[in-house]
Image (tube, rainbow, N blue to C red; front, top):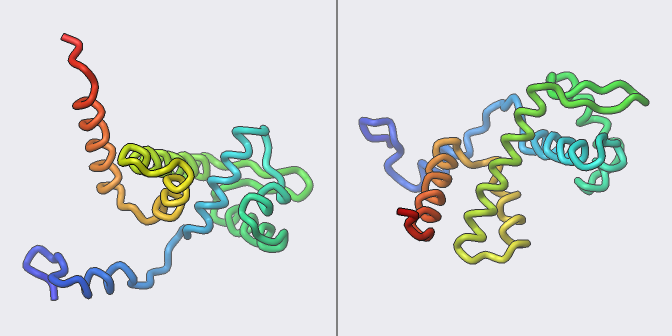
Length: 153
């Protein structure tokens, strides 16, 4: 049951609402692929199917299938034997996921979590955080950093 503001009144309703199955335009897995392709292109100048397969620990046929799906969705341009190029939309999404990861990992490190654990946890959460929550987290971290740094007056 929801109150007059439309907010669920119980934990069960929060769980139910979070698990409503909607047809999403973009899945977490698609975002993982875009992020890996983006990082590979940043590091090497290109991304191969084999690299993607290795970094995501998936089979080559799975990579081919997802690359075709991302191409059809307009997130990348793929021509067989010519390579993979992210579109502007693909780059935008990859940068957004990268930024989400960095903010989360930085927050976890700030509260004393080990680097590796911070990155693993950020990887698991980065797709599920609402943009408002991310902004508030970023504001909180900035305030904490400002609080810690000595006055420059």
